[in-house]
Picture 1 (spheres, rainbow, N blue to C red):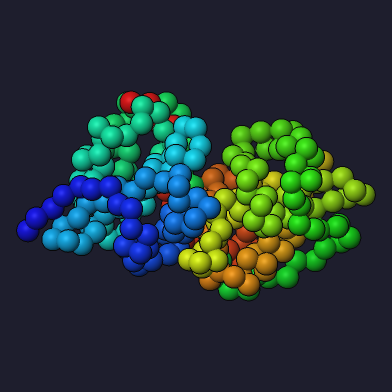
Picture 2: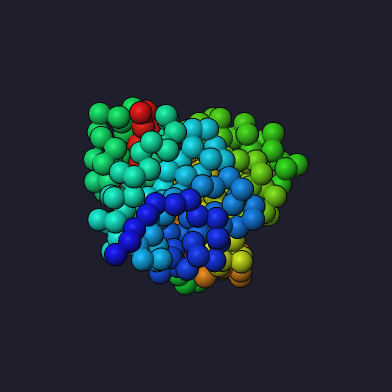
Length: 262
């Protein structure tokens, strides 16, 4: 048996491995799209010519994000993390399946963002009653209002204005004022996956079903071109989890988020 650790560049080879479990790997699959792929580095452990573990370094943000989710490949993934330690950036966000951070060392954790759930929608979203809010796609024309909205209502949100180019960001307006927004972190019609994100309701309008209204509208649109929609949510955010369940999302797996400094 021969094994080696390599950097992969072949999309078809990467996709073949990730597509064994598209719900678990929805973000990584989405990053194969041409819109995101130039910002990715893929590390693989290869045994007798076949991928046995795969890790993504997404460098399209600062600090970068290392994504390592496991199902049946946990031991091989641990081996891969050990092998790429010298290649890891000095600071990164880690999105790891539970316990994998121990391979890096818990003393390297700078911030612990807690346990998160991966939730998945595989069917038509449930209809949500809209009491009269205006819901429409928002674009770069709306960017100043969107930026101000996040600064007030979701200051820790990761939002890349480039995502507006996908046409998959929805805003909710009350008397012309933006009071809610839902969009995507990744979206790939080619690979049939999307990850919803940057979802927030104005503090003045919480408890009025805006999250559910927007997530349902966005999901209905996305399912015209993809088969699997995922999203990540902090496990302590019970109101958001209830809202996503009301739309039809189900908890699929859990993972841990950290800021790591080596």
